[in-house]
Length: 210
Ligand code: ATP
Image (cartoon, rainbow, N blue to C red; front, side):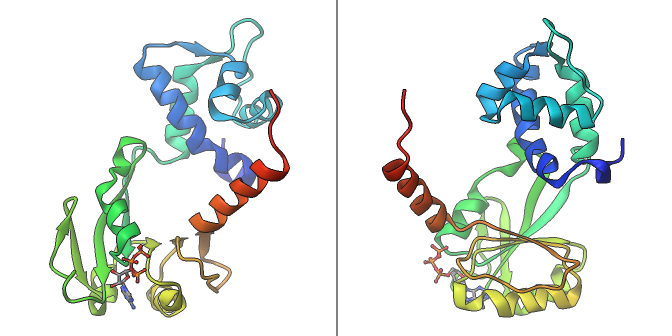
């Protein structure tokens, strides 16, 4: 089945499903029920059944889903067999943490280079990744289509413009700044402060009952 037939909301949940199923597979489990999946990935089971129906996994009553079949599908759909190389821009506290974090544990994306404007950071090797001067962004990133932005908010748009100019496809924006890009470029925005604030707000105003 072609990926562009899957709704975007479903596509966004695929990595979540993939990670859980991969763990099950490592534990030697052959099948999983939508209830089990639902509890593990915190998506209601009706949504899971609908998501899975898009890729032809219909789950049998009393049997559940075949783990290997699903994994095979997810691998193809998520391009798990292909390594996506990523560049990180801004090697501050957050950027440094990402360089140390091994994304390969869960999927096939890998930070292969980093950039910073601070000469004291340039030349470092952090978690096996070299830090280059920001001036070299264009020449070094030629073959890379995804960037993680961890620069200060005030620098986010000007760095984004440079990325757009040389043909970036996707940006994972960890700065609090809302960045503007042409419509053919995908930006996912993760503002950790906002996420935390929102969690605190929900805990206070909508406490979960047992
Ligand atoms: P963090 O916000 O990740 O906790 P920090 O507080 O250590 O980091 P920031 O001031 O947020 O530092 O800057 C993040 C990193 O971005 C720093 O390493 C800084 O040198 C770098 N940086 C700042 N401006 C630019 C730029 N124009 N291009 C590339 N890197 C930059």
